[in-house]
Image (cartoon, rainbow, N blue to C red; front, side):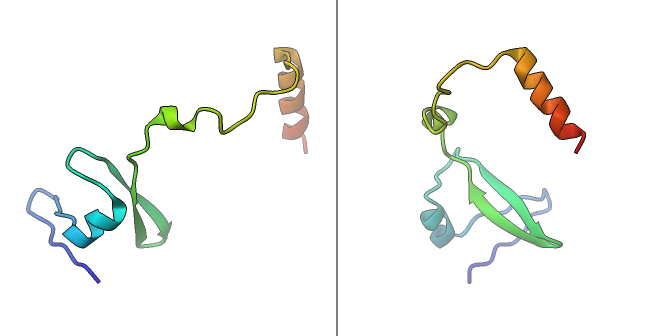
Length: 78
């Protein structure tokens, strides 16, 4: 288990073994995700948003705004 100390400015240095496992380097961002009360997960957020392109396939046919609104309204009444 790796530990870190908090400075008077609220900063921490992520231990080298943790940085290596997360594959983060200076300038990268990390997120602190609360999993349950008082338990956080440190997640590297180094992925470029452009890398998400193509994950969701294009629809087979276009959907009108009217149809979208109708579907949203019908699901809100459940």
